[in-house]
Image 1 (cartoon, rainbow, N blue to C red):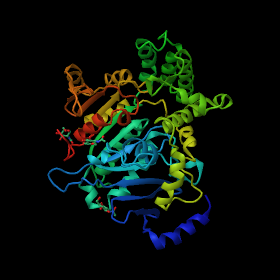
Image 2: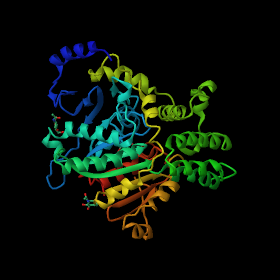
Image 3: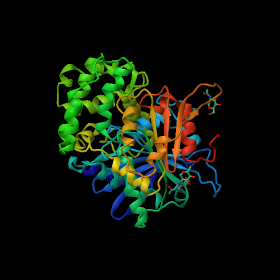
Image 4: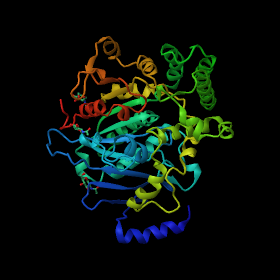
Length: 456
Ligand SMILES: *[C@@H]1O[C@H](CO)[C@@H](O)[C@H](O)[C@H]1NC(C)=O
Ligand SMILES: *[C@@H]1O[C@H](CO)[C@@H](O)[C@H](O)[C@H]1NC(C)=O
Ligand SMILES: *[C@@H]1O[C@H](CO)[C@@H](O)[C@H](O)[C@H]1NC(C)=O
């Protein structure tokens, strides 16, 4: 990353944007004229730049006794762009054809998207070595971002922040939750943490890999539920050989693909048809962990039917609108490196972090799509049962309440809560719950953020 773009950017900034220098770091932001959207870069560490995009809800209310919530959306991957995928393909105001999304979560809350960890989407590092190697490093960077955005805005400080994660984002969400609470305690961060929601989240890799065989056997997709690779992964995790475990995880995915005639890991009712198309055989034979992540990202990008090219959109019209993306930064250009640098933490469980949050009284909501394989409900239930939290026994023993949505009488899911732990089972949804079941997902979000426009 040369100096020239900074110089060019500086002069552009003088004209169009504000460019304050905080703690020696460069913070830069722009937005729409009427203030409904804001976006910018925060230099979370020297030469490590994180991009964020904030949408103010048109439904925002002012009642001080019923504060309007803000949702921070954390995408998975690792290395998948929240600003691109979460925003345009899942819950933002516009879809990837730039048509209004009826079920946008803006109906219930303000939305803050971020390209996390640095290197993802429009975020970038000027030196590869600055990419994060652990979930905690990512959480520290995100905390720095929150300090930059919230400490200078009293309106935002009055709104509780809900961290909502999908997939690998769950590991960032729980580490960020703890890191943000610490920063709030130390008075470095002015923010109310409303709660954390873990959507189909990769909290305990060993419980997920163990769930794949039995689940797929029960739904007739494979013939043999046993697999020696699961044992191998457990052993590798127990011995702290986490990079090896990541490798074996990849091998296991391959075996399952073969024995299921290419089940889609994000919805077992589907075939993973795009994978053979998007990846050449020679490419599949290259370094194992990396190729898995790329395949994951490819499937994310095209899961909506494959007709919209998110890369073209983000590197075309959207970057033009934003106006502050440096010329030599390509959206998604460093995504693959992000996942590569995290391969030593990919298989590390984060159940303890969930326990810590529960013990601190933070509201933790878990939701899971019925048809997901990669983060199957079966695996989620298995790690929940490992919690040491004292309310667990009661939580497990109580009954669930059915969920409906819209005018029909169809059961859309189930939920139950005990104290600060809440669980939603979402029927007929795969890994991407808001995409597969937008109506019930929106109700759920309104409910767990205690949105003033929550319908029930
Ligand atoms: C849009 O959402 C509203 C309320 O959430 C609903 O009443 C309406 O039917 C939806 N419209 C479409 C086209 O889905
Ligand atoms: C602070 O938040 C309010 C409410 O969303 C918004 O209108 C305003 O533009 C924000 N200011 C800054 C500096 O971000
Ligand atoms: C947790 O959620 C419940 C139910 O929505 C609410 O009554 C409670 O105040 C919340 N607790 C915290 C600490 O936000």
